[in-house]
Image (cartoon, rainbow, N blue to C red):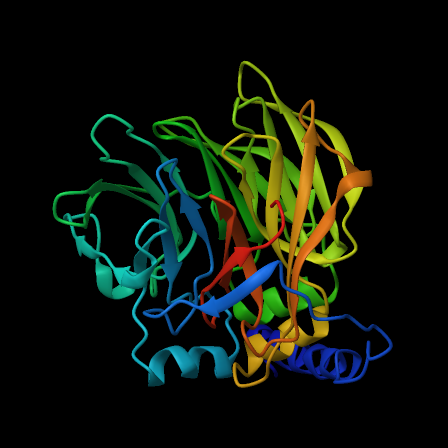
Amino acid sequence: MIGGAVKVGIAAIIVYKIAEFLLRPGADADVHFKKHYPGECRQVKGIDFGSEDLEVTKDGLAFITSGLWFPGAPKGFTDMITNNNAKGSIFLYDFNKPDLGARKLKLIPSKHFDPEIFHPHGISLLEDEANGEHLLYVVSHRKGKDDAVEKFRYSPKTNELIHVNSFAGDELHITNDLAVISEDKFYITNMMYFKNPYLSIIENLLALHVGSLVFFNGTGFTTAITGMRGPNGVSLSRDRKNLYVNLPFTGSMKVFDIKADYSLTEIQSLLLYTGADNLHVSQSGDALYTGAHPVLSKIMEHISDPSQKAPSSVLKLPLNNGKVDTEKITELFYDHGELISGSSVAAVHNNQLLIGSVIHKLVICDANIKL
């Protein structure tokens, strides 16, 4: 008799082949985009294997995650990381010293942290404006272990990240991004429910709404919102009253009010008509920026085979009383994938646009227009 695991494997392969057909090149070839930049754009030296998420301080320091890997990643994706010995890393880019490029920060481990199995995804920070010793919280897909959130303290004197603590729990499945509301209190997205690679393929291809939003209160995790389809990037308003969550597979975003007990009430659901990835809120708090995947089949091909380019897009989403002003959403950047492939995040500082990617380069643009 065929065992249950083998049956699941066979079923997954069949479904995967169907998806390959549906997402074959040309399946959405009737969609056309025009390349445009807000000004002069160029690749930032120092990063070669992804700049998946980033956070920027008020004084222009950008902390960037690189070397993404996740459970169930396609073979081509995994091979690229392995063959290039692309370690999970966090880089620093200083908007005020662009000639330095992106510099890899040294990770100082604790007994709770093993850098060899660290593969960072989403990132969020709490600024220490007095001493510059910012606290960084990073989603980590740990090879051979369950996902966790790693907490670091940045030392500006030595340019090191000192590991402070790890947070893990049964409520975390395959995670993506997080938003820190205060020290050791944060929301985190479960982009997928199943950790088994075959079941995760089926979960995605059948478009199951089994993703969730989880809250950590300093001592434990609780599920805040369930029934979501692949929740991805998440960000807070500057006043910490609203939470924004991107759902790229449905081309949409949800906006929540944060209550005194940290429970969430949905106040807006909007279509973005693109696969919006990570979010970053402007320093003024009047807009969100998001890296986006305008052609989903192309980003799927790119993740399966990183040599295949995927288009990149950046949207600006103006905010009004916590909600997105849908009439004023604009696209700041579009590239067919040559300059940057698979844009995943964007942030603005001093009218410069910094754009990250899932597994490709980091790009900076000096804008000729008001960003």
